Image 1 (spheres, rainbow, N blue to C red):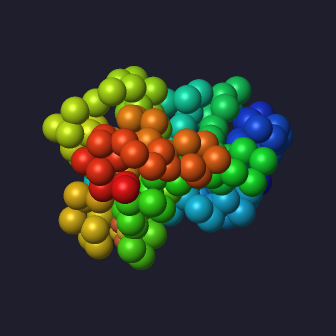
Image 2 (image 1 turned 60 degrees about the vertical axis):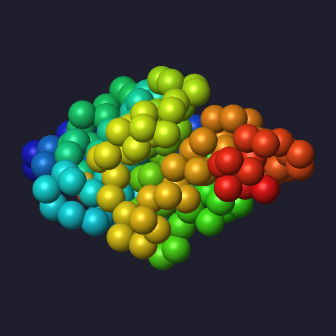
Length: 176
Ligand code: FES
Ligand code: FES
């Protein structure tokens, strides 16, 4: 590749040095070069959010960034969220609240939700809906996704998957 550029990027806590064409999209780099196929492509116009990852902790649509723009930065995909085999609270909450069906939107939805909760740890229902407006889902009708984010925010789902048994908030969030 005559016009290739060398990038150094950290993805899910692993450092990579790669030669990439300047036009290679970050989502293509993640999927095709690194095999991170949990990051998905659902459109070609930046609408769906299925490709959402974190760049230095903030959500971005990886279909709308070039891999060269990630040079020197840290990327987290859905595959970097679990720790020591334990689901992150948001992953567990999506499971507990039945917030997915086909699962195609789910990685992007969870990455966006994580970014949302980092910015606003205790969002209202409306703030969750607004915060996820860049992520489309064809299956769930969104209701249980909102409940899952609320449950993760309320701490009614813990990192080890334990759901607090007697919490009223858990019932409200559709967890109990
Ligand atoms: S693939 Fe649809 S927004 Fe990125
Ligand atoms: S679970 Fe199928 S698109 Fe969201």
